[in-house]
Amino acid sequence: MIHPHTEIRFINDQVGHGVVATQFIPAGTITWALDKLDREFTPSDFKQLDILYQNILETYTYRNKSGNLVLCWDNGRFVNHSFKSNCLSTAYDFEIAICDIHPGEQLTDDYGYLNVTEPFTGIDEGTERKTVYPDDLLKYANVWDAQVKAVFSEITKVDQPLKNLISSATWNTIEDIISHKKEMASIAENYYNPHVSVTI
Image (cartoon, rainbow, N blue to C red):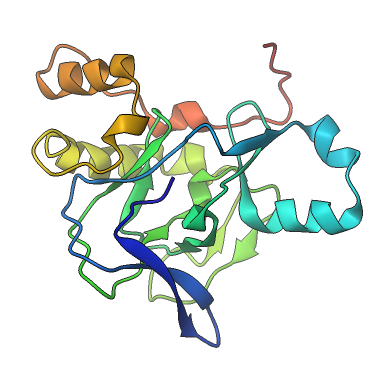
């Protein structure tokens, strides 16, 4: 579920629509959390679908560490890519704002941590990276982990409208990380290796 203080707006002809903040969202805010209405499709499920549905899933889903396609049921599926994203995923099935997000500003993700299957060239934002690759999650995990760690302690200090979607066990883990009782798990744990079979 996407943060409630957001809405879909037309950005421009190049980007199309995106998810925009309607109120101030401070760094450390959980901006998206996996919830019970999000639907997961196995590769086998995907292959059995009509091409129309396959195209929709290829456009609006991400791959989790099991290689399954996850379709967000709400506006979360419209969050655009940025090489300078203001939101980052974690190993705990939620995303976090890594900087303050102001009203009218887009919420963005780096698609490099979404287990893409094919490289794609993003919009030129003046960054060194120009292309997203399937193994970006391994290449840039340390960078993304550092960005999350820099604001992780704010999670328990700011308003969290999505807190009820976070399990008590995960919330306890968050508190243990903040109090230095546990190390934060790396975003690299989300990596799906298509050459290694996953047993569930």
